[in-house]
Length: 413
Image (cartoon, rainbow, N blue to C red; front, side, top):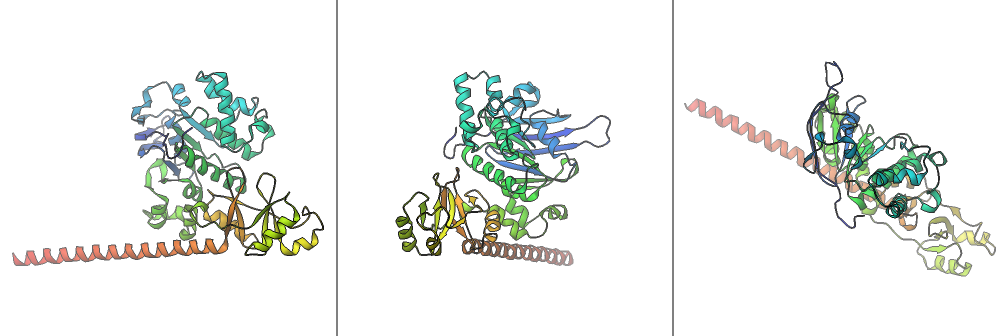
């Protein structure tokens, strides 16, 4: 597995990629050209029927292109065996696509087995992949897909797609069939995985907010996959290319900017904590030492469990088990500020715990921190708009001056 900032992805180049079906007058995908850097996450977004999934599936040749080229790390893959190609490219789809008659371990192990890996290597890899996507190998190894929740199935689907350590991961609306809360958590998980693995990811969605949250760059596609704009989320939000792109951005561009900043990028505060097994005296002392009148009680795995206030101690005679208010929500370090803001707004005290990879306590993000970040984003947008207007005015003035000079020149002649 890669460590640090090592990029394990591959470059992808689509060169005039086209797909025609039968005798249709119009191609489904018409001459798409695009360059994707190694380790980059690129999102394809567009209206239904624009050909974004067709475009994605041509990369691993689940759909054969009619014409054009696909180059991965400079190699034209349109001429090699498609089955071998697919073993080199991870593929995750909506509803996970797991084989129902195989266990979780067997699903994840399938491609490594096809590639001839040894039994011990495959076994280690399965455990590694389950751990990577946040599923306990001891608990999930022998389960069948029907015994998993929708979110767990999607995690296994991603683990299977990454099992053979492919440089490229294709994802076709992988989180579209789960509930909104699970979807947010899966998005955060993908962000965390990409932060660790640095694969090249091409991701199809119809949800522009999801595109903003996940993408390094977004390709907004018109009919036949014509590219309306291919740029960073920031550039598309602040300077959409035309009315078609503006329609995708929609209202509230400044609030959508909250999807571009992660909780790990803002100040996370610390609060007094105690373990649920700590003696009552220890908990009382930590409450007294803290700057606020509350403390976060952690469970045996170090995860946020209950908020405990000074007044709760009087109700707990001997045991703290019944005291305090259960923690109802938390966000990961890879969650967006929009996720955090929603969580904070639903909390009566205006704060939410931040957790690590295994749900362990990291800190707390509060309303003050989030509002300061929102104001900074709005101010940055305001300054960018002023600078853009200034540049336009300079261009117009320069153009007017050139016209005047040209007019004087003609008069002189």
